[in-house]
Image (cartoon, rainbow, N blue to C red; front, side):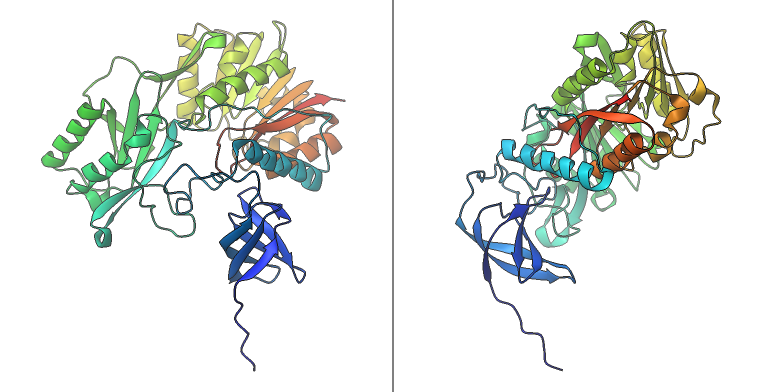
Length: 440
């Protein structure tokens, strides 16, 4: 059998681009996805991975650049898997994400909104207040790496700083690397959780072995020098405990000034990573719900009350439902702290509801959905049992939003009033979006 001829470099004009910044060339009837190439550019590339229906390629040279191409700000761009779109203007990044949402709604859900919303925008640098940094002591490099995973390999990116992390964590990567590299347990410390609040900054160190007293001294000194709260996690999430300082007067918190709301949270709680966008998102969601003093509102996948508390400033009754008891407990404490007695919270696995639950059929005028990437299929297929007049759906995955939108429109008697993207994660391939439904 003749050996397959090895392909050399090829040149093509890019006809489109994927949501994660890969250009699409169509050669001999087969699509080639080229990392870093933009629509309209003439490029030379080398195929690296071969598949039945498509190939993947490395960009070698750009002969004619797109007007949307810019110089990436981060030194680690191209290697780091955290960002894939820094070579594209922020405006065109949003265009790509908006097209991704449009394509998903049309292809998967077979729906089109009556109105396309303008992208919800905010700061594009130093916006990320929550992150999980991987840690690896690399003997060959003679140092401990701290950062995000590489784009094309299961290794940790060798990086000195991160342009999207909130200040001052953005410039603290090298210091973290040096400090962790000085610990006796540096090979037994796989990750660091970052949480930036309005009142303080917390780092949670996952430790697989107990730190020595010398290690403890280094951790305390790092917390003191950088004015941080240091937590240690020895096992599951229930083992996270404050290490430095010994005690604090106030929990971590963020605010929603428009609603006079303060939201307390623990450093491992889920909070929206972009505080400016979160404020805009909560404003828009409550505005679109249009709840008044006589309305009953259901907030599903409510977390620690990010939407519930704001909605309760306007609605008559609010019920937040969440699968994790620790989050609903935090939400209830937040309600009490903010003087809200018209909002309550309950624990329920929303992927397993069957419609027999008493709270499902209590009668709801409005609903807010903010599910995980898997979406809210079990809820939307039973929407007739809830019966809300309006639904605001916040999504972190356009595919599952499109699936659920199709169910609401084609099976549950709703109109897709409006939809658009939320630029929660600039420079990344992550597509956050929001959709508003009204009962037909």
